[in-house]
Length: 147
Image (cartoon, rainbow, N blue to C red):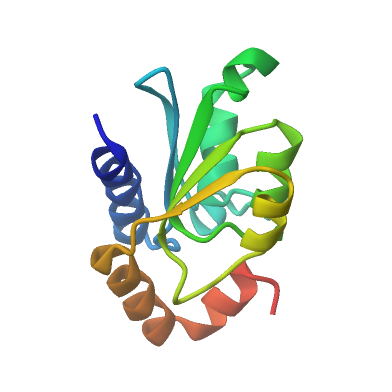
């Protein structure tokens, strides 16, 4: 599979999250050409303060060795926020593929400064999912990003 196909896995999670009434952000943790875990923003569904797409994928992957994380790529439909950026850095994930960073842009410069390869795929579907959600649920969106 290529980056676009793995991003599609994350997009499917975003669609599921939206259908569940949550924030449409999805993620997939991939290493050695296979999906280790998928995640979606489940703050609303779980009443959680920390279940963003990336943190959900990490939680669902379970305990992995540092060697696995150092070979992994985090695919995410939206630019990672401060919390998700911190998790990526903490576990030494060397590559992040982002579907959209126009509706929200996290500290991508920090990732790059710390040696993480940041790839932008500029997905129209990722952008449209977020634009629609942000227009319909601005209060929930602001809560999600700590505004």
